[in-house]
Length: 437
Image (cartoon, rainbow, N blue to C red; front, side, top):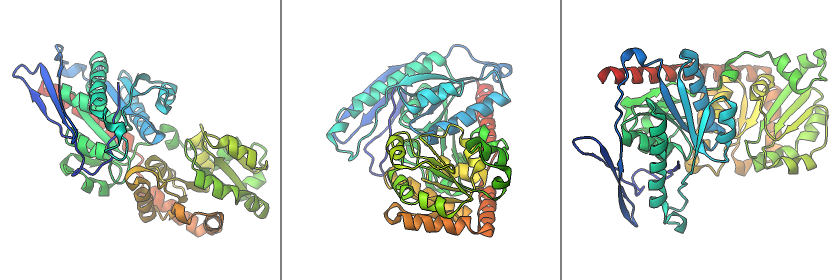
């Protein structure tokens, strides 16, 4: 199976789709027209012979999730899947993603079946020689997706983003399977913009995002689904002792914990700013503790440069992110969509440093929205240095009233029931579809 990412403006992207059916509805055809070539391909599709009765809908519910690339796409899908299993434990779930990827390890770890596929990224600029074989790769991807979907025979496909989401959802729509998509960012990318025409429902995180889609009647502002572990209460003291077991009880009451999230793979600008800052902060503020996720690819270099300190925990990746959020008083992070929403859900003050390398400026838009709804501080990367970051950290940690206000605003902006609401919509769509049959 393969995946495809689209990152162009809808008015200029050279892709056109049409679906044609014969009277018997046994064939569906796709026409792909690019500026450099035009290719038509027909997929022979065997229609479902077994029609589920209304009574069997819940017992036989089968759901495919297409999610991959980053935790921001994977974790919302896992959260929705968890909720479906809570509502209906007999639900059969399959995740589709890329081989040797983050999802290939994290999805099975979450307890779900996974099938790997070959992804087909769209390179920039659009006319790059690397894109010459794109039409052929996309068709191959669609055929692989169709094969996997046919084997699993799902009632509905849920796309939450990543290269795998586009071809999986498109193949599902061509086969006549219901599709829904979930957009985490404040402004959608072109892939979800295109898929919104084929989707039954579009679940978005913010009310303002609805205005970005052409079919606003399909959109439902539910919030972003966050992992169940983040919605489970853990006391700040218990969480802190998990990371700093030598912390005395009398110290914990006065402690201030800074959580630095350098991304899953590493945010070089954040790591460098912290490298020039952390030791002076720890020396000057004896009640300060730092949990610093460097990112996997940056860890070895950072470990060789950072001095050991009893109030510092340096780690490549935080597997217990729920405990890290619970322990923290302030978070320094990139502005990925799911990280932003997890900050809201846990009610944490935050300093956001949006990545300038993310397509279509998504992180800057996410950070700007966070500043509006939760009072988060935003530092763009061009202005980031140890002085600016240190001053901002001190201004927030040193002001109890400000931290309380930021926390309250974050909680008010969050929608903790997002995964449950989306799961209920999915069940309703499947039930309605079965009744029509």
